[in-house]
Image (cartoon, rainbow, N blue to C red; front, side, top):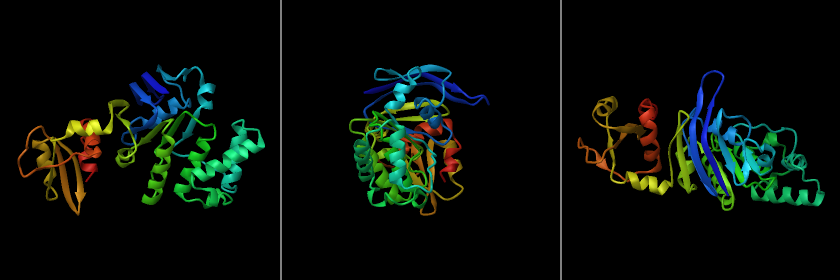
Length: 298
């Protein structure tokens, strides 16, 4: 299965150019879509999910023309938006059963088996009788995945799924996504680099409505090998270094700013070579368009 996005553009009525000639090819497995808040990630996800129309371009999922065959796409789509509501005074089991009926799963035995299987898969079975108002943020996100899997989708979209989760819930949720992606296209849209680091075999970086790069995370790291340099500096010194060098990130480590510099050769000035990580890949692209990130990260 392959998802092809070609020359996709979208401008909202307020003049915001959310998507600018987006071109992506996404194969089965976990695909990470990285970008800061406001980069266009949610606009792209909503367009793929047929919740809004683009101004131009095309989207193809296998034999389905997503923009003209919306019903066919929705039958094979599992979607977990950034924000979603649940009925607070109903149990997870009852709501999942109700949603399965809405999905057209009318056979009682088949529906019961499916709901039970999904509750086990998302580790919610022991809490299936609990009202959703009593669920933690991570439990609600796992319920969101359970409802997204009701139609046995070939395409799953999850938009900023780990924002606000504690580390344990975040790991549990990401492990669940990793298990789902073997025979399915799973698009993980996030601004959190760590979400993509361990799970995704392919990724893209998007900012200001444009795709800045697409590729395998390990290959992206290989391209930066030997080009990232690090130095801890005193507060107030970062701006001076930024005038001389290509500083891609500036963050506090143990209370002191640590600068990461992109340079083909040793920049001198006390900088030391370091192995790049995916955050360096991310900021090497984002900082070109957003110089203000150098202060935000500190």
